[in-house]
Length: 177
Ligand SMILES: CC(C)(COP(=O)(O)OP(=O)(O)OC[C@H]1O[C@@H](n2cnc3c(N)ncnc32)[C@H](O)[C@@H]1OP(=O)(O)O)[C@@H](O)C(=O)NCCC(=O)NCCS
Image (cartoon, rainbow, N blue to C red; front, side):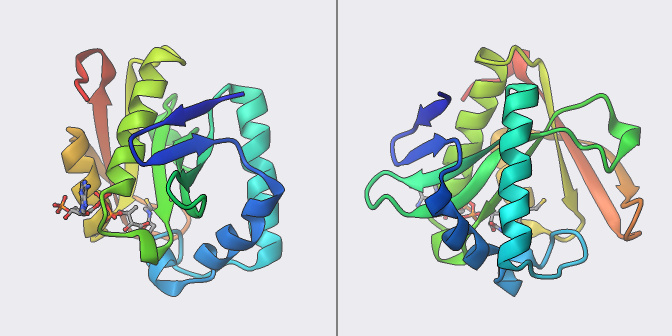
């Protein structure tokens, strides 16, 4: 079973109990503001998404980790790796992603989880490069991207929604947490 402990977080595979707290996160317009077309997601959509994320773990050997606070056991959201099939021009590539409930922002949890995810990508999966794809204007994500040491590789547009996207990259062979 794949689990990572950081000073404050447990990164792990998904449990049935995660559905309701993750659906609450996906139902918050502040959280969804910069994701796809910005629409919120309901419980059924979240259930399907968790199922898909678990399948990705089984098929790829990596995926989106459920991020749990060690102190309280609460689900804070997710951080992890995915294959960005929606943007073929960057492939083949593995991308990092994050989404936390708004009550968990501003405490350094996203950066802590993202650093652990990059170490997992390098050490456990042997990946030498990870990218991130963010929507232009998503300042909170850009802040995490900058702190991870990722560099801008290209600017493009979302193939479905047409808004500007920014693709950053990091060479993990030179990565120092
Ligand atoms: C993107 C997102 C994950 C960033 O979360 P975040 O909490 O802002 O990110 P961080 O973990 O870097 O924490 C930020 C702040 O916490 C503060 N902080 C408090 N305690 C801290 C600690 N112990 N360690 C580090 N930072 C700490 C810092 O001030 C830090 O800001 P700074 O780097 O400017 O100094 C969050 O905004 C989110 O979930 N957004 C919605 C989903 C989304 O848009 N995903 C991206 C789609 S591509």
